[in-house]
Each structure stands twice: as structure tokens, then as C-alpha cells.
Image 1 (cartoon, rainbow, N blue to C red):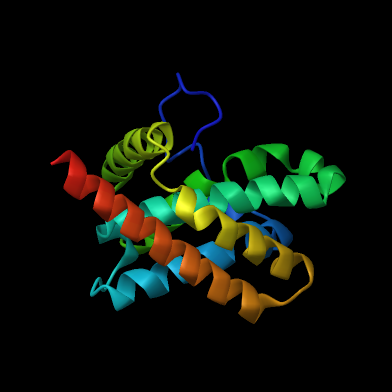
Image 2 (cartoon, one colour):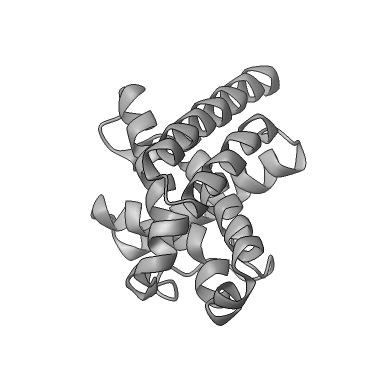
Length: 170
């Protein structure tokens, strides 16, 4: 989530409002919509209280940011800091919408970062990556509805993989 593993995430330093419209529409918005829809289908009224869906959000935004860098390196270079922090900004948006106080947001970000590092190290969420790649291609072609469907599939696969992994590790 953060570009420097030694720096704790500071919700005050990540301003979701600093995301420009193009970056939001290409990297954050589609993933946020898919994660929220998936969490709702799973019975969670709010995205922030579904840890697996939040981890899916982080993975989708992280991968979409990587794809954006590959698709439009010049634009991505100009917005490198925004893109590097897009996953964290997306999480801050979710937590702010839930009206969590800044100290709680910081704690939630730290917990998410730790969990994300664990599932990355264990290669738990690989099953969703191909759907994220397909979504990225659809976004490149301005096919937002097709991208949404792919991201929902990615979210569902990532969540299923996380829950299977949790079941094995407990």
C-alpha cells in the first residue's frame, strides 16, 4: 500500500481529494465500485467492515495503478505520487465515508497494510489478477461496464481466496 515499507501510513498525509479525475476514473473508482458491490452482496452494509473486500480493493487499485503506468507511462510519471498512493487513498475514502476518526483510520490502514503484506507473501490473491488485467484492458478501451464486471469477478475470486486461506491458517 505505501511505497516505503518503513513509513507508517498517515491518513492525514493521504488526501483522497488530491486524486485527479482521470486517475480516479481509471484506477480508484472502478475498483471501489466493484469492492462495495461485492461487500454488499456478502451482507455488509458498509465496505469498511468487510476486511476481505477491503483487501480486494487494495489489490485491485494496486494492479490497476500498475496497468495505468504500463498503458500511459508519461501521464503516470507526471502523477507518480498520486498513483503510488492510490490504494491508500481509496481506503481513506472508505474510512472517511464511514466517519471514522483519523486515529481509527490510521489503525485500520496499518491493519490492512499488515494483512495485505501477508496475503502477498503467501500469493493468496493470485486468482483475481487475470480479471483485473482484463478490466484494465476494458478501461483502456473506455468499456466501463465490461471493466466493472471483470472487477466484480476479481473481487469475488480474491475474497474467496482470502477466506480459503484464512480457513487453512486457523
